[in-house]
Length: 192
Image: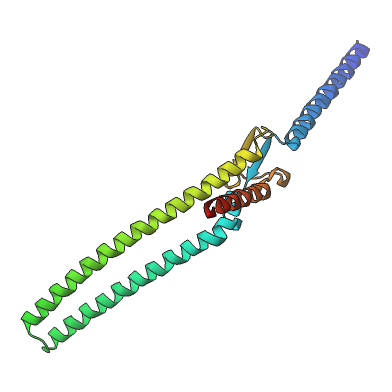
């Protein structure tokens, strides 16, 4: 009886080892399949920041936006200073109530005009930024589609959603190169 029990344990251990080997083989096969390219990820922020389109047009647009914001902030600050000076003159009795009211109305009209002009220019800049962002996104998507035209990858993910991934799955540099190629073609086509 004891020999049968030992034989049964040996048999179960043997089967268990075979199952573990099968599990290990399946894991190795899955790893090989992934390494062959079913999955990939793209660091889109890196691609956008390093792209030729961002370096030439994006930085210029960002600088334009910042200068415009600073310009309107300075104009608003100047107007506030004028209002404060008017209030000080009135409080000191250097101008009459009628003159203070007239100047206050004039300053309020300028404030409304300034606000309207700032909003109009802000909307134009916002539209420029949206168009630029759409162009960038379109270039990235077209680059990814061209890179995966042969359906080499079953899934391409954005790197910002990843917690951990093998760097060999990163196709960001290939996407960046393709984005730059597409942008160069777009630029040369628009010059013609």
